[in-house]
Amino acid sequence: MDLDLKDKVYLVTGGASGIGEAISELLVKEGANVVVIGRNEVKGKEVVARLNADRKSAPFAAHYINAELSEDEECRKVVDQSVEVYGRIDGLVNNAGKNDGIGLREGSTAAFMQSLKNNLSHYYAMAHYSLPYLIKSKGNIVNISSKTAITGQGGTSAYAAAKGAQLALTREWAVELIEEGIRVNAIIPAEVWTPLYEGWINTFPNPEEKVNSINERIPLGKRMTTSEEIANAALFLLSNKASHITGQHWVIDGGYVHLDRVIGTLKKH
Ligand code: NAP
Image (cartoon, rainbow, N blue to C red; front, top):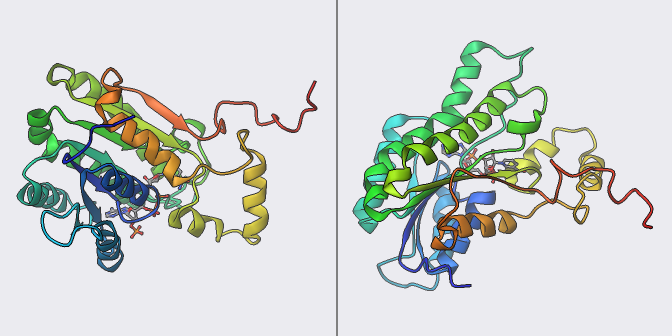
């Protein structure tokens, strides 16, 4: 299937690591241009150099912008600079985030609010500043949320609140932007092996045992979802092949959230 993304321009927040990196990479493979946004300049430039390996001169397929997205001004700067470089925006992937474990017991209101800034406010800001360009291009938005939005996790109030709000905003923006033909969808990953995930697993006393116990509970294949599998879904949603899909929450998780986790432990008939 030709996704017809050639020469289009996509912004990917957190685009130099994990799920975002896989989305950036696939976009470039499909012939699109990507603005990779992150806050680790060394890693970001490394990723972009790899993505541009086949293009020795401008226009380059990928461009890196360093930004701390919890700062509103930084989000405005990202959008302005993206348009300076590529002249248009066809889609926004709101993806940057971190499960920071601000819980109900040990947390504080200040830490909760700061976490919302880190994980939620830039989803709004990036959409807000990109909007005039998305209207021009009839572009679209994909928000990466998390299973914690619908299952809870325990010990992570602020992250769960941010992820839940991202799903609400997906519906809200799908309605608000329907007349402009701008589609807005969300992807809900559950267990995806990324640098963020690895960091979380390493907080357990026996990380390997923890990984095995999680894999065992994932119905399809007893394994985690790969970043590439999330990227495949994201690119489909970004493309015109998804031209009548808007306001949707796609759970890409091998059945982890919705199927009976006893599957596979039952005897086959
Ligand atoms: P990752 O490997 O850590 O990649 C996320 C990237 O976003 C990192 O480079 C991170 O930088 C960056 N970032 C985070 N907050 C930022 C900010 N305020 N400003 C600038 N950059 C920022 O994580 P991932 O696992 O791919 O996660 C991507 C998205 O998927 C997140 O929204 C996460 O909540 C969601 N998700 C992941 C899983 C999973 O199983 N991996 C499950 C459910 C949902 P730093 O490294 O400096 O933090």
